[in-house]
Length: 201
Image (cartoon, rainbow, N blue to C red; front, side, top):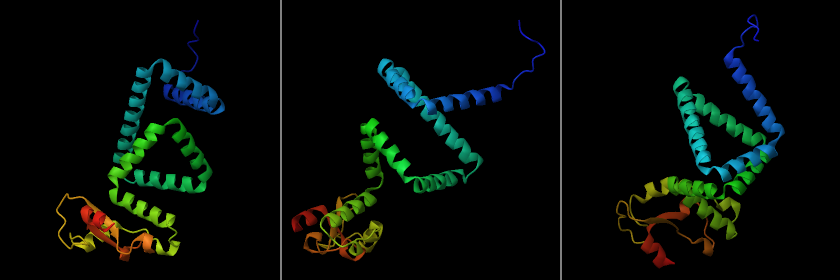
């Protein structure tokens, strides 16, 4: 028999308290949470995929709503994440190790997407890596903006001095090769046709 005089609880507050209790319980029992997720993925992959899709959709809607309500929200969020990573680097390293171990294919796909979206930054990273591996001193390795190399070339190959057609493959060539003691700096980089650069090698 229900007590009619019992005050009704706010459903929003009840939902918040339940979510808080579940969050604390999961934090205290991480091994159970991992086993449950692994069991769900193994026994019902379709349900797991649908759950992941709904979670991603809910996160996207939340971000869009927050950005519409407060245009500066995204920048504050990015700044907070940057400060957190600097303040707790060991936690970030541990998270990255766990993620790579449990999501090897997702990590590889993420790196591939980043390379496709940032081709100039990827090439700059590759050039710096080759220079470090070849023993070039740190003061002769720069964080080069390859967009400046493209702009300085004015659409011409630095080896044959012929125009580079729009959409034609191109490469960034070290004027003095790294193998010959050249540096990875803006002054030692030029734009080149792929065929010209290959012929030079």
